[in-house]
Amino acid sequence: PGADDTLPRAPAAVRLWFSGRAELGFTRVRLLRADGSEIAMGPVARLGRSMSAFVIPITGTLGGGTFTVVWQTAAADGHPVRGQYNFTVVGVPVLAFADTARVSPADRVATMPDEEGDELGDYQVARWAGFVGLLAVLGTVVFRFIVLGALEKRREPVADLAERARQVGIAAALLTVVTGVYRLFTELRAIGHPRSTLDLAAVAPLVTGTTWGQGWLVGGLGALVLLASLIVARRMRGGWHVAAAGALLVAVSPALTGHAAADSR
Image 1: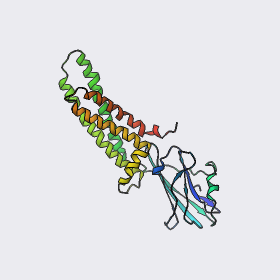
Image 2: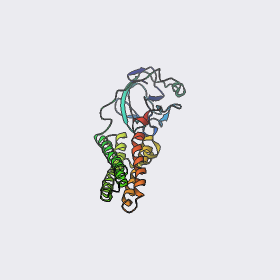
Image 3: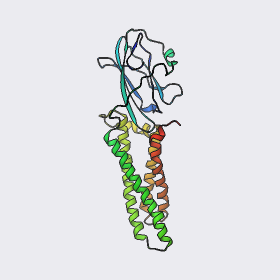
Image 4: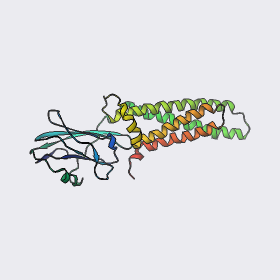
């Protein structure tokens, strides 16, 4: 049912369409009566082969009255979206689920405006801190290979400058690692209720089962490689080359966890 629909019969399912790819594992839908009591629903499933449409069968009894659909999901870039809408049933008989599944989305589409507060303040802080760390990491690596490399070709002494760059790089890598862990937990909070406690059981499906999580893994691996290689770079010159590879992984991560990842094209 669409927003503010009045139905002659109770529907057998709730169907939702989103404008972009949405993560199945973090799509939750609740159906509430006017008194706030919850009606039982089946598991969320994708509607056909669509990456942006979901169907949730209603297993409880609706009867007549006004009902509220409360939904939330996360886009492929990790952006949390949530909302709710009402519909009214004036009769009791239930439609066959097989019939409702064949209805096209063009028949009844409820357009939901964005709600304020989709992203918490600490979620935004985590993203900005990550960009600061990324900028410092890339600056350190570029300085070591481009600036100091040019001085080395002129046989200028660069050992002191290289050591200072290494120390700055370690600090930047530590910031990147800490920010990455911080962002993981703020992402967990963002896709749940803002006041909910951290659901540690959701870490594994978030990291391995979502586009955002896979991008986060790439950045996290790069940050750890970067940190370890800079630590050994004091004794091993090759450590800087490994650090450059880690910095590249860190640089790729924002594209895999940003808006580009949410576009199916």
